[in-house]
Length: 636
Image 1 (cartoon, rainbow, N blue to C red):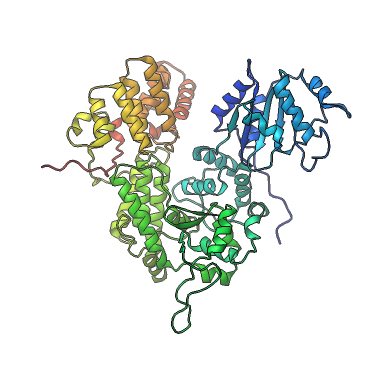
Image 2 (cartoon, rainbow, N blue to C red):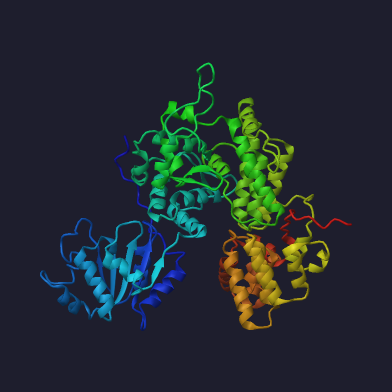
């Protein structure tokens, strides 16, 4: 039985990640504009957005009421007399400057007609909130389909903003793989995210990450009432073969579809009458599940569950015997991990590190199952090249944890050897000195680019990459040793060609190299002669750098230092040499408190926690990013 004492509620989350949408909503209700319709799935933050937009303004507010379709003007009861006609209601509300209608999909027909008439006949500015997927009165949907009002479709929050909300809710920062998991499970539903976080607080599956102030969540998804409510349509499927199909996918997705397979729960038999391997998926059940949006079949004929939350919930809801029957044996993970590793390795070789799904590795880590150290090192390398330095460090730690676990006893070693069988082409050995060294090297490389993580120096034997010279502002050292977009970046920097640096930065961004792109834009900002172009490049560099999980490199340090005042730059430079606040104060004839205040402001802008990070941010010689994936041209 659950404890009857309610947990302490989560703190109010800040309004974050919607600055562009907020400006758009505010502009839509200003000047000669007539308003806006905001739509999106449940829990996306539509109501919070419009509430923030009208805060402090003269705005009337109504909301649709469930199960009130037969009550005329039910939503407008606070604003209208008890008995009123549509014509009179329009006249009474025509003097309202701004009207916010929340949950407009729940409006009764009379209220919907009133909203439509106000859009057509009055000067009232309308902010309408509608939930996608719900039946909408025709008079409301005509607001955007009839082009009476523009429509804003609210997308999910970026992962970076999810991390910020989770940190506020938990009181301390989660490690990146936990953020990724929560972000995937919620799929933009902030209410579900909040409910999951509330349930996880104090949960035994939350563990501190050694050497950091972060926490990690490993283990099954808790089947809370809120989670069950979100997945009730899944757990109550009773059609022939449907629940068996869903459970099989939950434990072993993706699975192939055999189009000439059975259309019922049949099982192939061998000549002796025994089951011959796993039964093909039931096509009839699959078609029904696909029609209802519960499964997805990709272009290669592999079928997956449609929602990231469905697999964990189905696994958690399965009984012990059912789970033992459907769960994969450890050695069965090897081929799937090999396939993911081969894909990632090929993309790195093609200088393309855009986001690609790697669900098997993500699932194993989320459930607390060790992954091969070589696979983890490859995931760390891929994340680092994307500029996701904290995620790279987290994957490297997973690889080192696997190595330590496998060496702790024969049972763990046997399980790891099975899980890493072959884990081949790109992942390296499951356990071994080479795989562990790769993971340690990736951890050092990630930490070298993140002052917040730095605790380990890069290994002295790290191979030299000519592209480092470009990133460090010395492209002449890489002359003739790079190809493709990296050569274009070097050439543009050599000639201080701002527009060419912009083009190189754009191509790097397109290929997924967000950190490299931010650095190139920062260099372009310094190279441009046109102040407008320089501001644009700088703005783009800052935006991309914010997506790189606190990464700090020489080019970005220069960008950050450019945001400081002249006095702050002066004090930061002196502090980076090792001078104390008192020594700086005496040299500059300032008070010690003034020096401390300037340093505190500078830490915030630079993303540093204290003065120990300042040498890395002000002296390029102490920051060595070292990506070693792009080979030099071989001599003819």
